[in-house]
Length: 219
Image (cartoon, rainbow, N blue to C red; front, side):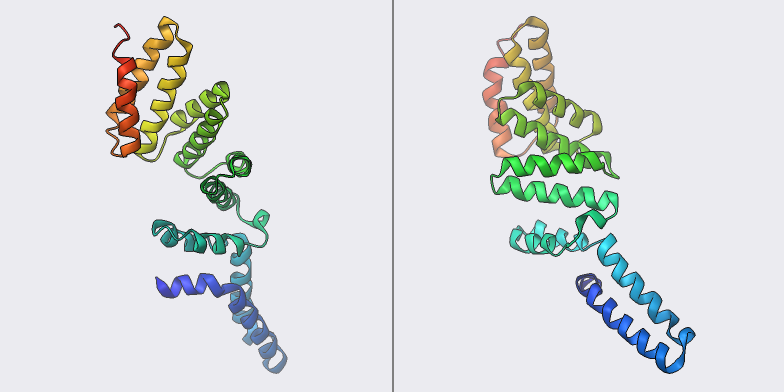
């Protein structure tokens, strides 16, 4: 695995070296002896531009080494050349980094690009829509926030913590509407949030606080 990661990291330069070697063999021995070297060079260089190094991001992200993640992202010179699902992931990661840096305008722009491109996994699109929904709620744009979060729930959310956060956000949205049907819906969303059994202290605390209001709703 470590060797493969090194290969991904340096494959562009390996491709250039192999191309130079192929030209040398071509000049000295003819085309066919150099054919395999030409092929290897094309594969290495093309995969650098069309696939990119996103596979290298998983380990530093899991270890919280965001400086390394940023360096890997910055090593992608022409993101528009990436295959569509990979380009979608690229913009999602860019959006997540911007969110961590509290740059919500940039984060929203990147996440919208990712959403427009789509993803091979509906859950990834769901997570993307959830983030956009939470940012809309931070701007007090409850209509847009509700639309995004509904879309996230429909597409599917990859983990129970995020799913609980989505249902809790929907609870808060419907509590604001205050009519009888909306309050019933809020109660149902709250129940779904609890059923996710979240372990995050922040979400658990929000559920406890919300229970003070939910318990007063009849029915």
